[in-house]
Length: 436
Image (cartoon, rainbow, N blue to C red; front, top):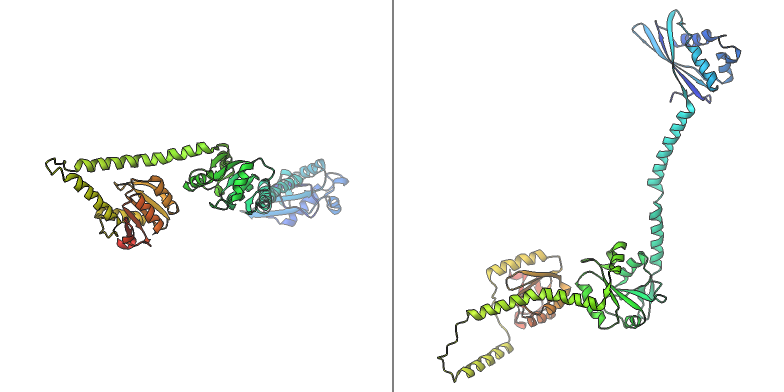
């Protein structure tokens, strides 16, 4: 857009001029007024039009080069289109400026309003972009923020145990039972109001009473802890359905889509128990097979029984040996380390891998890792497997509970960071980090 005079111009006449000589700006302006005077009549006289403000100040820009002068002329106009076009055409009648020949050519008549309109549109786009990005929040985000704050405010306390719950517990015929307050908040956030939390694994008595009155869906985490809650609660309360979060995730952290998918995929309590039983058998089956194979190998390696030994002493010797074994079992167990160099190196490497994870490796007799579980679930896992465990390596401390469970399951080695149990207090060989 050309330079605009203080006059409220509607149009600007853009003109190019070429002069065969060296002239000054006043010479060009004088030629414009002088050579157009009387050409267009009194109504379109340039001097009168400029005096009345219908023609703005004439801008002349010149540049002299090689004995010639060239430049541009800008004339702002508030006349209508036809009158402005006549003024522009009149400029091309100028043939001399001072003593020099000149040629004037009108390039275009610029509509200032169009230029202003383009400027307004582009500037408006820029302002709107800034407003949207930096000032105004997204409407969906605004709605979600308000809705979430309302849902969090909706959390209430239910029953004599003051359990965290949504506002729709009393009216709803079906309820969702979760483990804790964080689970309740997440479900409220995504629109579920018929939810109540148990505040951990210590199941309050009021939950059992509630389960008698409502259709209950137990919504648990997708880990072994969730399976333990199912087992524990099924023996106390009447659970109708079970829903589980995706594997390895907790109810408090899953998304709205994952919540809906889990609830749509809920199963009956009986079916959930069958699935847990099948999972346990799949883990225990290979271990029992390996145990039987190891026992058969030991039996095959024994020397054949010689019949020429004294037959009358055989029963006595066998009974005496059994009695001696029972006596040995009652004696305080003082043992030397039976761990081999290879096992020691493997145990050390695995223990270093577990540092900081609060996890545990369960190994079979071939030192193969059967699985990895949290240390908090270690006693229950050992109980459920029952046998076939050669070693348990975990990031923690050997307690009397873990030692007793391991001894009952015939575990050979307990490898941990430290131990509260003395070596002569258990038949399991305890190896700590300091022993490596």
